[in-house]
Length: 378
Image (cartoon, rainbow, N blue to C red; front, side, top):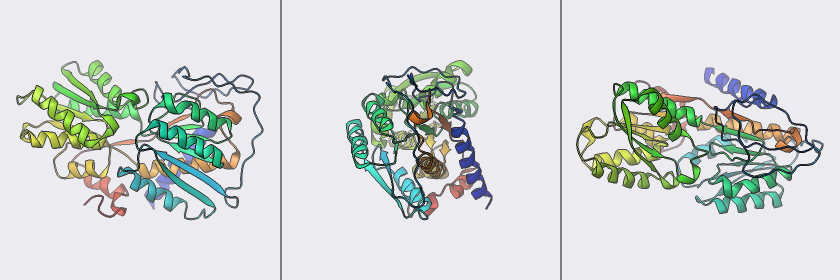
């Protein structure tokens, strides 16, 4: 009951923040901005100042025309990076449970298969089919951005999830990207005694601007822990575990001696677990290399539980999904888009990232909803 009340309180807080157009993101938000033309601009609080990648030539603000979300036919799309990852099992669980009492809502997943051109085409398909809201994990904002603007102009609110876009849209909600990396840097620095050599396995190169976990990690080490040297930074294509394994294997060959590497930060648990696998295969698991992940996927939580990985940053995907869906329904009910609201910046909301270590791993697993998915975690 207490957890349910916390979830309800979190969702209400996000709705209120969005209604007030208060952008709550970190200093350098990856949300887009726009020059609103004749649209009266609402200025929420945000100390970031982004310049849009694409122009937004809007005329006068159209009247809002919401829909009855309980009786009218509603169509909502979720455009993924790819449907292959375990995170999508949690998406399926969360959205299915939340939509149980909305039989009038049609919810469809689109598999982009790590191709931004697919995402762009899928947004176009949603516009043509008259979808009422689009949620998307953007693969490449330069490719997908114009289609997002087109959807907003068509009256469809676009919510970017974790991977944002630098064009104006209705909402960006994320697992606190920059702050998550900074948090990981401080935890690993304390555990390592404030000195040593670190490796960063970063986001794919094309997502560097919108996935800033690695940036937060690197900048925090540089500014707060000068005795920890960042010796290698590698982007990991497609956030892929095998790609991370291969990259870490090459790094271990380059730095062959015990003590050469003390810290490894992987920007997702797939990436971090790939690094763990490479360390174990090289026979270097006994060197005490601290590996830390992000997101709290089952493989990361299991690795922490089994003592193979030091820790991870847990982002509650279930809470993020339910919050995103609540907001999407709110936008549909009120007819709100960035155009009708006259936004001058995309509102950004950060979700909490909980540090996970051997000390609290059982508690986090119990609260994570992963136990509801058969075989996800033991």
